[in-house]
Length: 234
Image 1 (cartoon, rainbow, N blue to C red):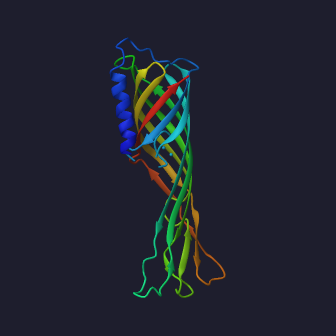
Image 2: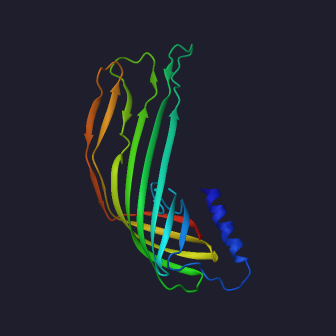
Image 3: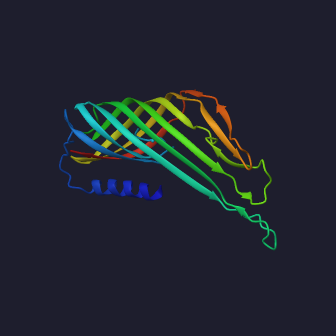
């Protein structure tokens, strides 16, 4: 995250020492941009334009309005080493692990407000999100563990399943050059619903897995996400 913020700050400083001529943003009806979002000013995880960073594309319906489509992919894994050895090393075991995978898509409608200068374009908007998340957890266990020991849990970390959500958007875009800009954006969760999912547990020696239905959840209003975005117009 520190490296990302350093890049953003460096870009702003470079833009600040650019020639002082008036910059006319390359924004008009039919203009397009590709947007690279870095989550980290707060928390699309799937958060920030649109899932902790992501890529999106904008199409301008006019100079003051645009639609934006974005995708985000989150893949995370950790390992828990087996360390419970006796002094003579006769208590071997297997390492544990936790993995999570999420994929999300988002669609936004943005409305731009007259800025303080031509280079600064504040905006507001609304967005819709669809996110799918799965997880897998395997605890570190001894090789000699008895039958009935839990050895794997799928979809047990919380938030697993399919999530539909909507958000209010507020941000501001600053043009370094006519075709390149930076923006900071905050998204406030308006409503989100996560569908029920099946938690599947596997036990050592068991002939069948144990499946438990996880309940659905709803969230009305709440803190959203923040992020910085690099826009390239064409």
